[in-house]
Amino acid sequence: MIVVTAPTAKIGRHVVEQLLDAGEPVRVVARDPRRLSPTIRDRVDIVEGSHRDAAVVDKAFAGADAVFWLMPSDLHAPDVMTSYVEASRPGVEAVSAHGVRNVVGVSALGRGTAAAGRAGNVTASLAMDDLFATVTNYRSLANPTFMDNTLRDIRTILGEGAIFGPVAPDRKLPLVATRDIGTTAARLLLDRGWTGFADVPVLGPEDLSGNDMAAVITDVLGIPVRYVQIEAAHLEAAMLSFGASPGMARAMADMATAKIDGLDDGVVRTDANSTPTTFRQWCTEVLRPAVDAARS
Image 1 (cartoon, rainbow, N blue to C red):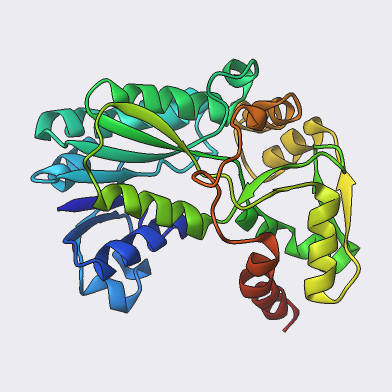
Image 2: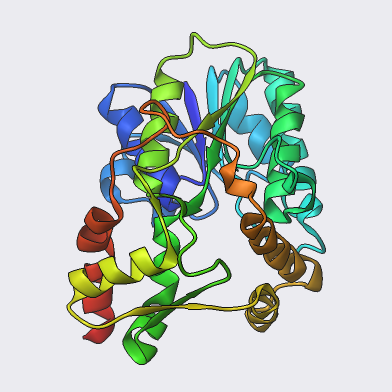
């Protein structure tokens, strides 16, 4: 039995689909099972509730061989350690209590870099990894920025012809599609011969700058789009406007500053840690339909 948390999220959905396609028995932890697609709902064992809840994960992890762990950010938490580390303690305790042998977690690049200790959400994600690694065999999916975050820019793409970010316009950084993170997670969950703790970088196929991204979006959508650099402090203000706590808003700005300072530069790209979905492919298959829907 493999347990998948956050099964309706972009990454979790891909994990569930690939595990089921491989013939694995799957149990999901879902706060709202109605959000599962009908084709998935009838093929999985469902434990309803939040995986922040000790009673829920105790029930879900009973008899499990492996767990896929994705802790969503809680914008209302007072700080990132509460959002990621403290929220994950019930899961860690349930993994230990039920002898779950393998856990794959969604985390971030940055371990070992000078910026890792002051990187907001990333710093907390790395601490969450360390917590799980004390009780079981653990693989941390070390991710850069998601291509899918560009979906948040649809309003400004259509309204201002722009995408925004804190990194210099020509600074190239890795960028990954969530579908490829899901594929990597499923591979590790299906082949559980690994032991101990390790990071598994998931870097996408190439490094891109903000200007590179804007050029691809322009070409795919057929409308002019430019990249505009903003101060990290603007991200903090935006998070506050979305209802984030001051601590969580500050963490977003800290993460942006850490990326500017080299947080995502600590891993050398290889064929093994490069994944296939290009930004152009993602824009064609995901962004363009979403933009078309927003226009209609």
